[in-house]
Image (cartoon, rainbow, N blue to C red):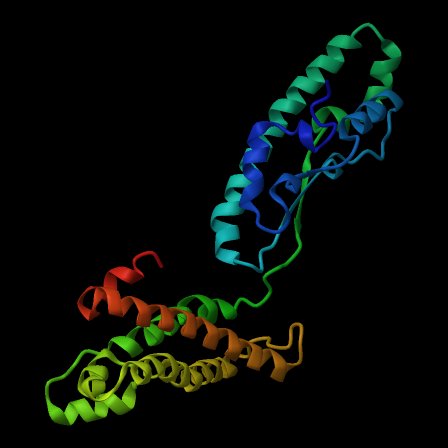
Length: 270
């Protein structure tokens, strides 16, 4: 049975490599073209000089989703894996074909017209469907998000300062801080306290996300890659705001369970 007749004919190691590329369904990656083995056999039998081995298998990946993960994990795993598997297949395929046609002068003559069917019968092509073209965005989307996490995490966890002078200032800096709630908590009913813990962080994260996005403007980020420059900018502001709100509200929930002293352990999964 031909090894590369369909996607189901892929070796198990290739199927293990498929889920590493998160763009299409795992069983579609790498994609083996229909009749790959048959095309190779026809090229050998007819001496097809136009046969291109790299069209047999296509590997799709989206670098724009996470360029660090693609460069550090996906490609260094997938490329050597496919190279090793196809190297074994090519060596076996060539040996079997030559052994089967060793006494056939016509077949060997036709084979000499298409030497690529011997040197590299089957190979693959890497297709980057979402290239990462904005290198300057690495600092904003990677290192900068560390500060976003810090802002979202610290806002509800500002420690109580026993000095009355500092208590007032801390209350105005972060309405949702644990220290501020200790001051005004006895004067609020349950409904008011819940509103304070939900609405206050959402209000605080609005200017923080806008300031964070505006700092990115001097670096000339391509906010107009898909939408207008203004639309892309406010979309980035919204993304930062939603991220801060997601983490901040999660911290508001967990601080009730763990308390400020043990909240650091909540961020370990991140």
